[in-house]
Image (cartoon, rainbow, N blue to C red; front, side):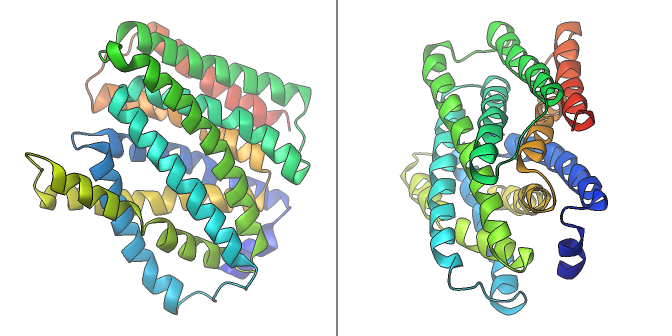
Length: 300
């Protein structure tokens, strides 16, 4: 499997596989965000998810994939720190604002700075047509956030803090997307990076979640929380794993932009699962997001 993926790097077939991986990551990332924001405290949800994928990844990291090369350990340390800060900011944002406002702002901020980071780190460039596509996509994402802010937001007292945290989280989305791409390209076997990433990344938040759970006056039953965690762990493998593989096979910036069609899937989840209203304005904004992604893909 590793040899086959490596053989696709920089090829047209690799580009097509990366496209499919990015779209799959978009859908699953929206599912992942809804799982974290669901009926449980987002800190507890994240802790349960991280514990699940850490335990699931450990046997593969320790006994299946080749061990990381010596130069990978500082990279893993930086990846761990970036992801801990990202998850902390996201959990804080979800506790201060609603999912439908916070999520689009996070996802809208991320791709713009990822494209800039990909230029600085990997010398990737976008054509004028692709930049126009980024503009269309961001218009749809931030328009959706503005619409949700006006008509759906209930946490008005903490909204300013939530939006600030959402922007900061978006910056860390760009940072982890770019640095993860650097990390998965720095090792010979991409599955070595993935297995060790999930094991290392998932080892911290369960302890934070446990301390929060223990301090609650009425903590939720751990059973349903862990069921959500196992499901979320499987989604995380497919979502984060897919986007990391896509950034190894093809351009980091393009994969990041295509992943942000997750905002469309998030709105659909809000409508179908969270029972939010989806009118013609939101449908138009979601169409803009999808159109921007198509322009980026076709303009390359």
